[in-house]
Amino acid sequence: TCVVLYPDDDKCMIVKLEFNGFCPVYCGEGNGILYKADRQVGILKYEDKYYGFKDCFAAKLFGSDPEWYVTKILDFARRNIFYMDLFNLRTLILKMSIDVLLISIESEQIVFTDAITQTDIHPYQCNFDRHYKSSIWEWRKALCQAANLIHCRTHSTQTYITIFKSSIWTQTVKQKDIAVQTMNDNYTFMPTLSTFLYGTRGMPLFPEPHVIHLTRPVEEPPFEIFQ
Picture: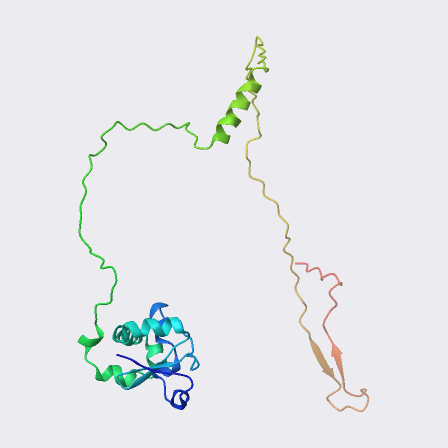
């Protein structure tokens, strides 16, 4: 059973609410919807704990079966870590047995079964219509094209010689090798320098010593040697 604390009671405004002051009914029924409890609506005391609600309708639902809503919030917070810390339920959930949290909430149980269905392989002869069109607009387009062909005529012209082919021969010059000399080798002999130091005997009648070049210039023709 629940004890109702009305807003005119001084204790209603100072007690600490469970689930960090959020409405447990909207959170449980709305799959995590958060609404702050309004203390002016009133507070319900259940097993020495105080619970606040968003409106009077939520308080009536909680009062009809408080154990179901409390256990549902605990199971929801266990599956969603964010709500566990938001509602300050981590210590409480760790202390509780896992069998207490895994309650059977009224919901449709889904039954899975394995089923195999065997059908005949090609019971009817396959027939694929290559010209099938699923759109009615495609059929209308084809009908308009067929209607236009009624007013068209085909003209053909036949000549005596439709295809005339002739062979053309082209004679080219045979390949031949051609040598072209572009470089000319030439050479020349440079004369060897020959000098003579004249006046080294020191005779007074001779001029001062000097060097006489005996090398002949290149442009001078060579001497003819007669035998």
